[in-house]
Length: 162
Image (tube, rainbow, N blue to C red; front, top):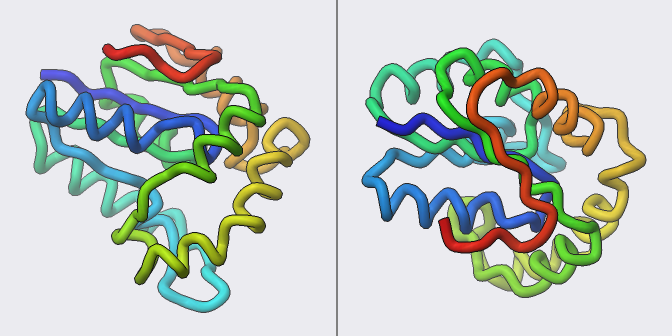
């Protein structure tokens, strides 16, 4: 059974690829966005230990899965249980274009209008990918990719059908 981690910048196609792989392979899907944040305004990150419990429960409850997100710290929790990683290391302009054309994500936003209202902030955040040094950064993702000793692939353009 497959156990895959997918990561990259926002707008890189993580959710799209995860959904396709899950449908094709009958795998469980975990979007780290749904467990990384407290339901506060502005959002605050949950304690790492709380997210770790949720990730561990998901891994133990599912024989095959895809976990996706931009959180290198949360992905590290799942690395020892994964068989494969996919790094979507697309150009920032491609990620921005993908973000502008993404469908409504009801698990993240109450309405499509609320999602669109957050778009300019998201685009600014996407554009900072190479300059940031946090867990969401290209540097953190590159380190995760380079340290991984199992099967791995990096896409630098919109991913092909897998």
